[in-house]
Length: 117
Image (cartoon, rainbow, N blue to C red; front, side, top):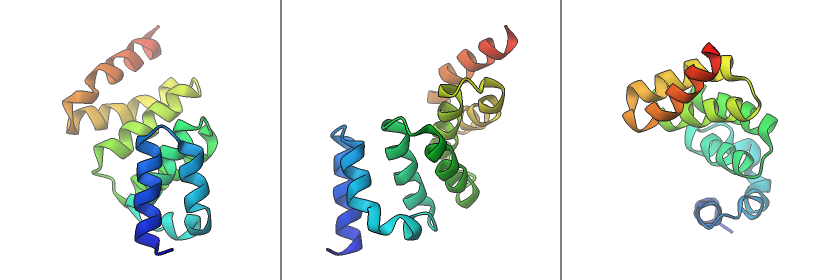
């Protein structure tokens, strides 16, 4: 199957709430996907949604390295760190994401309140 088709099918699986299916589809492409911002973000989303938080963190860190101005990549990395109860580590990512996209301000504020307490 062509890589672009596999990528689209994996996106569809994620949108349908089937992250493990998405990961199964892209399994042969994992190394290749980690080399692009969009691919790393796809993998990170699938790992996050399947609660594989260490893998999500590693992959989303790579996505942020490749696309530091992508607010969603930063947001999802922050949320991944939050889910691991690493609020202090999450806050800078959530602050940057909220600065780029105000839709993320609520999560930033909730994390900031958690760090302050």
